[in-house]
Image (tube, rainbow, N blue to C red; front, side, top):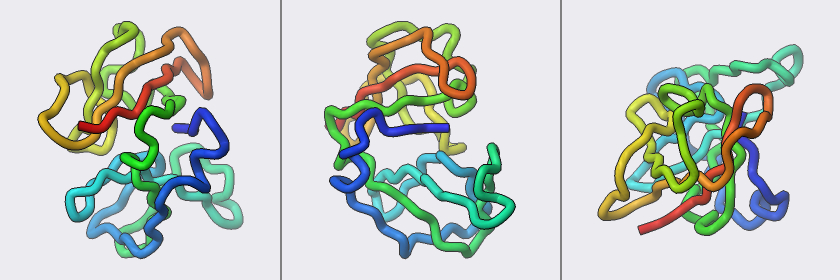
Length: 136
């Protein structure tokens, strides 16, 4: 699970519900569309409403939030959304969006969105961290 740290972040971000994917997408994945990074935050329907590892099938509309609108704000990120987990991360570590839509350790890019670890040793649904959204 990935949660916004401040409830006011949701109404202050740009949501593009017209985006669809050519392949299946896991909930809470980061995707790029037209050069813009989005976070998929879908609520399932019916029996799938509280499903832990919800997968949105190809062609279905995605509930996407434009990440750069949250510049300076924090996200609460479970370890399963970070390549290699969160156990080895330290405060001020830099994370970037990986090919599979998770976050991975990296270096500050020349442009776009990256994340800086601000809090470690947390728990959401498992070991978690907080990251600050940074935009170059």
